[in-house]
Image 1 (cartoon, helix red, strand yellow):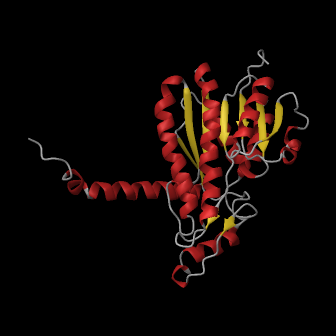
Image 2: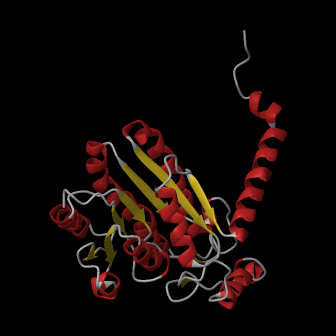
Length: 282
């Protein structure tokens, strides 16, 4: 364990999509990986043939007991974690008005509070070693709110703001922080894992309702390649100064940069109104 210089990755949500492709790519690179899912039987094939470098674990990020158990298993096997990838999460679609409280809270438990809890568990080891990289998979929705994705976007906005604070706190400790913001990719996000509350209000038929229908239509046809996304994620961990944000895919890149330019223009246009809110200077 002590003689192996290869980095140790902990990746959540590896049963499908980004997590699965990333875990496979990390192991193929010769790195060590803790590959997790709520049912480790669904990821056992990823570590098969690489048992000396791979460890499959049950991990539901909403379970503090499982988080604690995973930390112990990783300590026993590898001793530490170099890269944490907070990938576990899923989409929930509804109009804002028709959102179901139990569905909203369940999504935040996984996408937000589970992510927070796991990161808190990993931070002490990284802080002690003065080394680490925390990567969180958010979304273009972390910057742009789309019809029917209000609560999903809110969960991703939350992680983006939290990551800004985390980066400010840990930069001097040698811990790097990156948010990955994918656009449309051929994962299960728009398919099996997507939860929807169908809009029944006619006033939302051409906004939230239309987008829910269109998401189903494009599932499996998205331009984004999860395997290429995995390679991009590995690449930034090998940089001395990785980006704080990495938007993946042309569609997502255009959507985010357009939104940020528009927001900056709006803020600057209201400059006089903004500055007038201060006490008058003496």
